[in-house]
Structure formats: structure tokens, C-alpha cells
Image 1 (cartoon, rainbow, N blue to C red):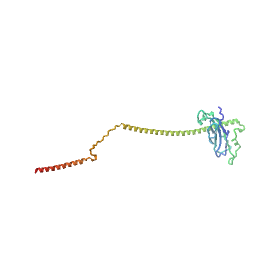
Image 2: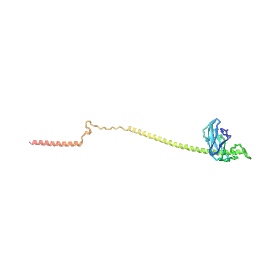
Image 3: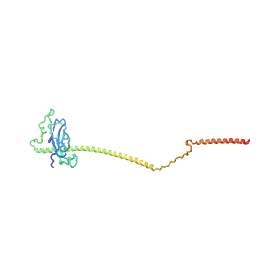
Image 4: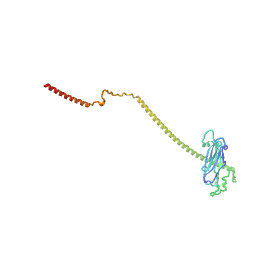
Length: 288
């Protein structure tokens, strides 16, 4: 199946240049422009993901929108005799209108709609006292793809072999990037699940506390209602009232029974003595 036409305008179109010396990080910039009337997803891959830092490496471009991509090459020891095989690939796809889908799942679900553009990396390092002069072979580093081939080689065959090698490198790099992205997504999902479990436990605790409070309130209401019902059902008993004679002396003025008995005995003795005296008197008068 034929690939769709190019969707994004890429500047630069063929190669990314990095100017040395490479003892520190070196940055190069790429500009992506969406000339269409559709939203376009993009993703940037490289054959050397550990040596480059790309920000942003994926995203969405709205119609006629542009975005600058920063590509930072990490410090390394530059050797002009070593051939550079670093490449970048920009993948793009029109956003589907019929559904909402994750960006990572989009590339897997619609592989036939992918459009890719490849750029190679060129290292240019000025001469200094710490580095030897580059030999003639270093010219092959910055040579364009259509440079002259060595004698006795077939240009078409070499181009096909180079394309197959680049595709193999990109596939390996894509698998590595997907594994990294899946690992990061799994970490995020695990963190979200842990937070969700904590929130669920807190929610259950709050529900239990609310249920306990409702039970306490209902118990108190039942106790109050049962007490009120019991108070209404108990008959009112007549309390005997002690009757007090209004003519009786107050309790504090009542006679003491032992004193009263003693007074009575004394009165009787006195009356007896008086009777005896009267009898004696009457007897003596009668004898006269």
C-alpha cells in the first residue's frame, strides 16, 4: 500500500548540522509546520536515543501551526575518521475524527497512515590545537546522499542496502522507545492505582464513621422515646398525706412520756400522803 503524501514541512529538510567542539552539549533546531487544514500528530525518532535529547519528541500541530524542536547532542569524543550513521525520522499522521485515541496507540492502530521523513546528522568540528587535522575520508561525513560511489560498485544496490539498514535501525529504535514509554506508563498507572486505593480506603473509613454516628443518634432517639413512653404508661399513685390536728400542739412542744409518768407518780404519792394526814386528823377528833 502506498504511503500518503508528505504532511509536514520540515526545516531543514535533509540533514541536521551540529557544530563542535563536542566537549559540551551542542544543540540543533528543527521546525515543523502544518500546511494542511487538519490536526496532525507527529513523533520524532532517532537511531541513537541515548546520545540525543529531543524536546518535544511528539505532539499535535493544529492547522497552519509551527513548532520548533530542540535536538541536543550529548558531549562525546569526536573522531573525524569515524563515520557518522546517526539519523532522525519524523513520523506524522492526520488525527482521526471518529474517535479519541491515545497517541502511543495511534501509531500501532493505523500503521498504513503513517508518513515519515528522514534526516541524517552531520558533525562539523573546527580545527584546534587539541585535535589533529581531519583526513580526506572525513569528507564522507558531510557528503550528500548522491555523492560519487567508489569504482566497481552499483549505486542502486548500495542505496537499497543503506535503506534496509536504516529501516532496521529505526525499527530497533522504535521498539526501544516503545518499551521505555510503556514502562513509564506502567509506573504512572501503578501510582494512580495506589492513589486510588488510598482514596477508597479513606472513603470506606468515612462511611463507617458516618454509619456509627447515625447508629448513635438513632440509639439515643430510641432511648428517649422509650423513656417517655414508660413515663406515660406508669399510673399516678396517690401519696398519703399525713393529717395533723390543728388543735394538737406542735411536735416540738409535745410531752415526753417518761417525764409525764414521773409527774403522775409524784402526784399520786403526794395525794396519798395528804389522804393519810387527813385520816389521822379525822381519827383524832373522833376520839375526843
